[in-house]
Image (cartoon, rainbow, N blue to C red; front, side, top):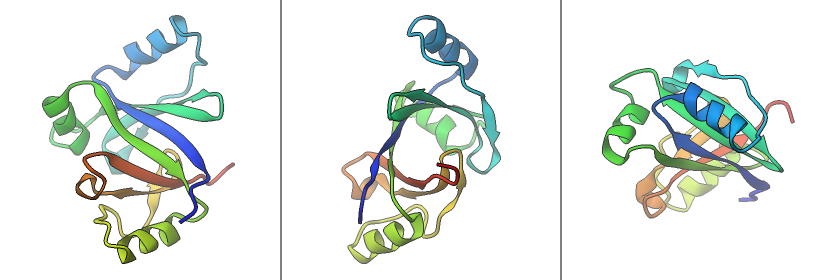
Length: 135
C-alpha cells in the first residue's frame, strides 16, 4: 500500500463553532466551512495547515460513534487520515494482510472517498484512508 501523505488529524469536539473560532482567532488559521456529513452523523470542517489539515468533528446523533467517543474520552484526537491513491485498493490489501476493517469498501466523506481500519488492528488508533475527489 502506498501512503501519499498525512491528509488530516481529526479532533472530536462538543462545540465545533467555538473551537473553529478559537483556531481562527487565537492561532490565525483560515476560517473553513462547516458541513453536515450525514453518513457519519457529524458536523465537520477541514482547516488547512500547510500541506495537511485539521478536521473538527461534532456529533449530530447522541447515539452515534463520535458522541459515544466524546462520552468515553472527552474532546481529543479522534483519528488520523492517510491519503492513498485508491481507497478500495488499500482496503483490500489491508484486509488481505489480516487488518480488521470498519469499511470493506470506500464511501463518500469530507476528505473524498474514505474507509476506516478498526482500532483493534492498529493498537487503538482509528485510521482513516482517503482519496480526495478534487485535488
